[in-house]
Image (cartoon, rainbow, N blue to C red):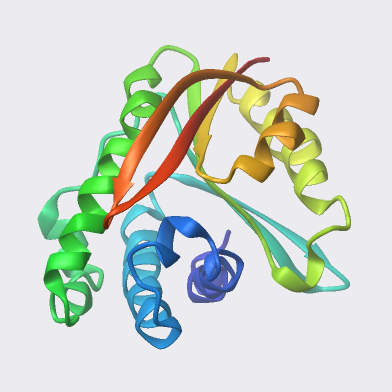
Length: 201
């Protein structure tokens, strides 16, 4: 991902995750949810752009998918770095109690995968395909022909990530990923599954 593509990639992620239970459980109102997602995802992408590795896919010149990878030496940026890259928009959002609940849930959901980082293990923070390109095999192609070769070339031998959508389980298992951890998260009064996957490369 080039620096000038950061905002475009963040908007793609907002569109791709707009109906994901990871967000809808906390923000059922669509307008409020999209406002929250734009604030958090844009800030996250700007803050981590130099530390993470962002891979993109284009179809006919149009951005179609983006993946956000954390290398083994990943360290979370400081609060100051987030503030310098737009996090104040998140702090100014209404319903800060829901925002904090979501942030706490996000930490719990990713805790297992973050514990695996180091050595030659990489973490897929997100893999998003624009809704207009979903169902066409692009996610599989991005993973198998983009992410995995990239990680191998960088010296990685293991990938990990988590999903909160049960419908994704068959897809990832078919590609050789194994569930190595499961949590049931309390999401604003609702239960949500969180499955962590690992694949040896």
